[in-house]
Image 1: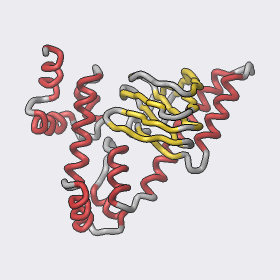
Image 2: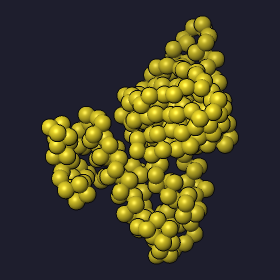
Image 3: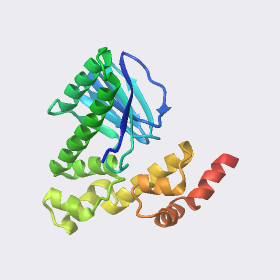
Length: 247
């Protein structure tokens, strides 16, 4: 649950190029118009009007506008379970996120009493709306491409291959066969590769310790992470980080 949320900032901007940033806070970007590309961590997404990006703390973010774009950005800090809210790009199908941004915007511009307290409350509401929105996504997942997209966005969750197969309506054996035929590798290997790629980026770009990285990338323990990373990179996570520092 959200124990405490502190609203930090609201930004409205149009037609811009944004440099890569990495924040200690959550950053929610709502694209009111236009289109472009957003890089979140190691993934690149294309956005259009009515979509929103979620950037979790310590994630690298950059967006490049390719046409006239207006976006509204809310930044806040929350003491939460890191597995609850996930970086990625989402569609605001029911307009609930847009309405919440409008509420935050009105309060931000007001001079009413308890303004800061209401902004804290509204950013917490935004957090829960995003969780609700992302949970609905899995319920609609039923094709192999949907599954690939879901793994790309939620690889740090406790994802079970059996549950993904169930969503497609196939048996586990048939699901693995179809996934492997389309992607060239089994779903379990694809999931592991996403986690390892993300952990590598965090080792390069952040000062998070090994335990924190293992948790944020979906590994069951730091020891499991170290073993699998060594198999992947030929060295332990600590050795990999030290090799970059001393290079």
